[in-house]
Length: 307
Image 1 (cartoon, rainbow, N blue to C red):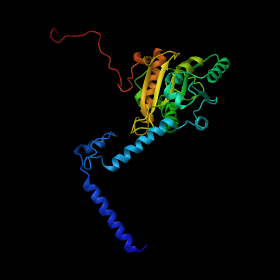
Image 2: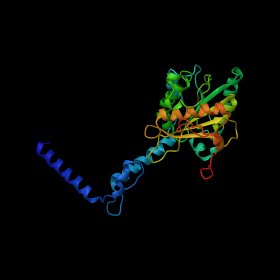
Image 3: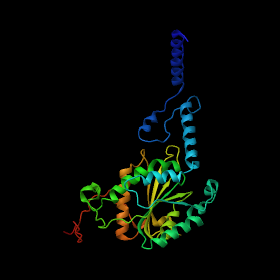
């Protein structure tokens, strides 16, 4: 092709792009996109949404579907986590819920809340050889986004274990922790549990069978049209089958474009420490990790009208 033809084609393309831009009526609210991923102020072309925004929406919808239906590679994830310096000495326990496949998981939420018989037997056998139990068990479940687990699990656990492993060394503690009283003993952490087709409540089944004091469930959250990779965290003290969400504390939207790993780990570590000290979780345990030092006040109230 000659140089002249390339120049002409380039000029034609510029004219086409210019014509396209002129055909779109911009919305003055478009500037709000600086502050949110929400689809706002898209403008219009005639009576329709501009093509580029329509294509972006279709891509986001496809990514959300992929997040729900992509299979979690438990073996690969187990190898990845075991290669980290903080990894527990025992290899991860690979588990499965009673939901035999994705279709069953989506149609029968109750099946995703309990372990299948093979997994239950595996944990019962492990408990028989470790009757002393554990302070903490971390369950990693695919939930509604295995992509969230694949992308965010290791970075988050890197940040969390850096706090768990150094809680007795004040020089390494996060500056936000200075105002809180922390336990003086280390955490006895169970082998990581990787659960396929699992929902949040399956952590209670795992916690009870391993005789653990606390369970931390990392799970892929339901994907939105701007967040197919959002990781959720649920903490339950003394989890037992039948507990409701009122017994849990939740930290949501853990991902690079949402709640950063270090910040999420700081909040999780605070809740773990408070749950351990108070021996409770859920609605009775408040996240005050952002409150800073508590200012002590006198118990005697004074009324300025009578003083």
